[in-house]
Length: 250
Ligand SMILES: [Zn+2]
Image (cartoon, rainbow, N blue to C red; front, side, top):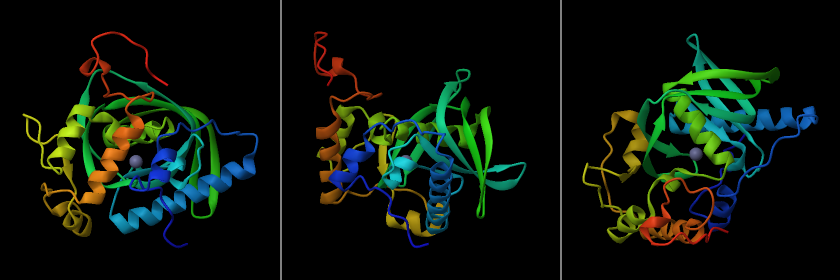
């Protein structure tokens, strides 16, 4: 299998798809569910090899399939495993939150700081993919912590049409664009670039700020233009812009 085509936020048509919520999977159609599971896992493996990214996840919408399913590459009892979660429901457990410097295969030029709960419970129809076999484990509720919990939340966001950029308040994103990507919040970095060196050498290279290229700035401006009034927009607070409670959501 060649390199899978992953939707890229830099392409405006892809961006429109990425911000669209996915629909539930029809589990009665078992054959096509299994085909989609295999497709997702193969694409994820290819991306992991290319990007040295592990653990990692990939949602169907990133392949242009607007269905509520995502793949997770993780470890269970030390062994690598690829699982696909279909029609997931997520519940946050406890109050612990960690800053996730979230990368995304669909937004490869930028990492975004996303504060996320570290403990979750995910209920989904789970499929285990191993080589050419895809076994249904039925509908189960699993508890997850740390990296797995952060990735699962990122992927469930994708199924709602939410991406990492949604967690940047519009005012910060505007300041970021105005300074060509060099703006920082008072605590240090709010949003930062992933220079080429980071991707080439894996996690050994320190991430530093570099000015964004014009096409990257244009991508962020398009995102703001397309998303500023859509639902859901977790970081978007209308009170920053309006003093009354006008319901202007579309
Ligand atoms: Zn992503």
